[in-house]
Image (tube, rainbow, N blue to C red; front, side, top):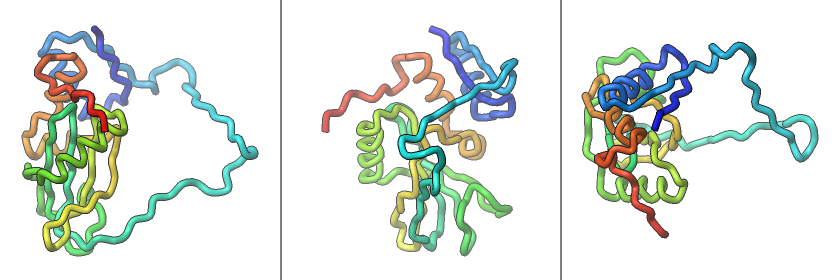
Length: 182
């Protein structure tokens, strides 16, 4: 089996996965869609007119937080990392702070919930974002079906790219998600 990876040349996260697949002997074809000789076009037809008056928006309650959590799920493996937030900071991935990402345990209730989310959504990979409030409660913000993990792996050493490579190569150690009937 050959793994196809579509991404830009500057995608460090993909570089990490490609390196692991190469070490495992899994054939890889990597393509930057920008290198195609012509445009790649996606099209859609709106059922109610030719234009969209408003787009979807996700509005969330502001959570004063002490930390950000990125919980990356690959198959049934969970990799959680935490970064201390500055007062008033909105998104911990951005901003010049002295804090770094550190591996953190996943509360059992959160682990069960994200596994159920993945099963119901039919996802094998996702990156969940949480805010941790002053009492230590994890507040769910979003699930990114193609969320980045390289910035976390580089700071924590968590083997996320290896888990992705194992999963993509169908390796038995990949932690494939068993079918869950809810």
